[in-house]
Length: 110
Length: 114
Image 1 (cartoon, rainbow over the protein chains, first blue to last red):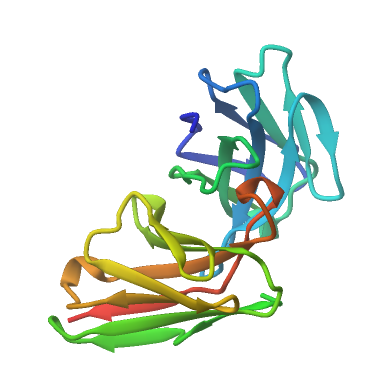
Image 2: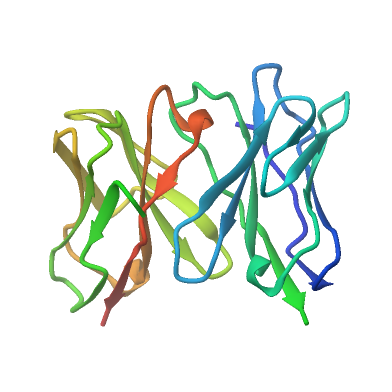
């Protein structure tokens, strides 16, 4: 399982675009990159997954450069309700298990 | 969360007593997982199951055992609870061949060992 490194915490303001970068230098060929979001007192929730280039859904975008050694989760026009912990995970989809790191605590200010 | 229920939601127990947490799913997913979450440690995998009666250890399995006699139920047992096992416990399920298809997490059980 690839080790990931992401910032411990970030602050931003309502209406801004927030970018959270995750480093995964030892990503393997079969590995995908997945992001989860966790609100206080709730379990994590799947946000987005990608393998290369760019993936976009109704919640976020995921940018993956050609070397795949890092990835960036982009949250457009954040609101106070986006305050949460965001986890970056890297691994092959057919792995039986995945290890969560400590995540990035995102705090949105009014 | 729809399809996955954890019970109890909160529990206070005394050191040395046995405790069993239950995870119940209605999605018929093959894979089930138990995680614990503590400040400063993020989510850590305790045990997981890849089918009825098929289980394996995660990174923090000492002091815990699991059982899965039916597809829908995954039980986590603390044989003799210790204060270090005070934590929030999350169950997760996935549809097939592991996590890459997206885990669905339960709402958690807050366990306090006094």
